[in-house]
Image (cartoon, rainbow, N blue to C red; front, side):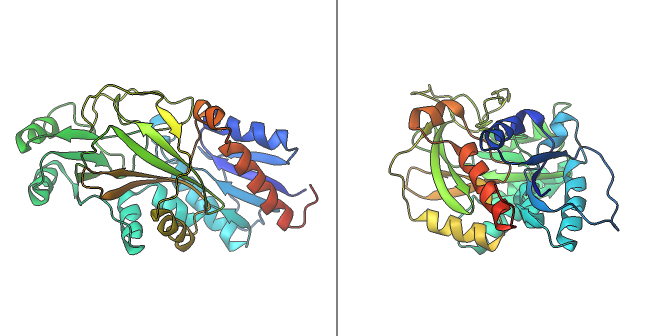
Length: 315
């Protein structure tokens, strides 16, 4: 029987989706790709395959899950299976460099960024950037990994050459322009089926781990925003939100074959919008959704059901 196959490595983040699939009586199977076997000569099962592999898998002990997922997606592509958030989406998920280049190609502005491998080169990259203050972040990250704010080159040197230096899992550090917002928040734009669903205002006053999933907690030591007091709920769905950037975002998703994503952006005091993250393993916050009566996982489950029905399955 054809099913919806969910490719992932985090049970806690996936149960919200499976609850909705069960609510809609949709057949599904989970493929947890921390480890496993692929017979490349065999045919994959029939169905719709939804990839929600996370760039932060290594923080949960699943170091090679994205690499294994990439192999599985290549196998599925070879067999012509319906894959949502396929190989291209995965490449952008695990590399902010790839994200920024793709965003720029679509005419979307990202913060000025210099990349480096090696501690000495991180210092050289900061000199090349020559913007103060600035932030560092990991190329393959998630959960705000490696995000720190520096006001001087001396502070960066002290950190980089200390035992506290957090080495990126792929070795690539990003040294990036710090965008100072007039108020401590960013906006995360949620897309399902490549179409805008809703936008969430996210309070950053307590830190920069912006995962909206209920299971996430703010535990980062460093924060790239000024320490201002929160003015309300951390996550708030915005009403009547329709800026022109949404058209560019939808076109970007189409060009890069991304079906489901959260795109994060921040506006500076002069009204310039900078897009800095594309998350293809998107999650939703239950409190914000209950307040707005909008439910991302339900909409996603319906979308997966529609794609399965297109394969000829009666639901």
